[in-house]
Image 1: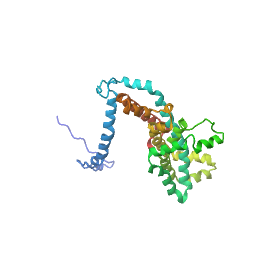
Image 2: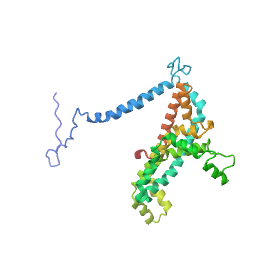
Image 3: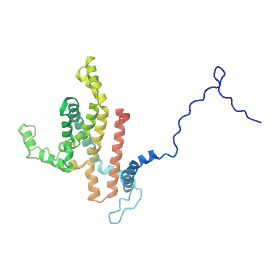
Length: 307
């Protein structure tokens, strides 16, 4: 039995229909795209995937091992339960300090970025240089400078005591305020620069249009300026919150033993106690928590496509 081939399509007039144009074929065997991606892939593999795999593997070592006898892989998932039970206080404190510093940076940074974008005029470039000028000095030196500024016999404390804003025995150093102030100062440029990039691209005619529609300045800001600057807000908060939460230099130099954060615990477990499984479990736990919080924040902000 023979099978007839299907008849070609016909036009309403009875003639054969025109065949659809063929799509141009991609040249096979082209590896240019893969070669361009190779450096970034190798970099991520060498400096992120392999170290993170090593960190996760270390967190599952037998905690009864030691630096001299070595550690045995026993897939000790209980290490994570132990670190949460023993160090939930520094972990929560790091989150609170990071969030407070991020909120302070957002308020201060938004005002500064707004002034640079719309009010600075010909001084715009100079103000941008002043924003990034602290990066020309060491992070450690900047933090030590704050230690001098907030010292018990320093100008700030004496002035506050003279104004009756601080008790005679009151102090700023070795308090949560000093830690958050240091974090805010050190990470403020990470907030200002993304905010400035978003505000500088904003069309001022949109703000003028809101005033033409009888919106007062406050309503115009929240209806026009703030929504259009959300990409900078999201980027700035992420760039500030992530390093501020993991930082331990400010808590070490400006705080006290009561202000220890999770970074201090990880550092002491790695270098002083040589308890690698606990230190690795804390590091992995902190990384996972930050990633989860970032994903929730971005999803709640509704700005996945803006990042």
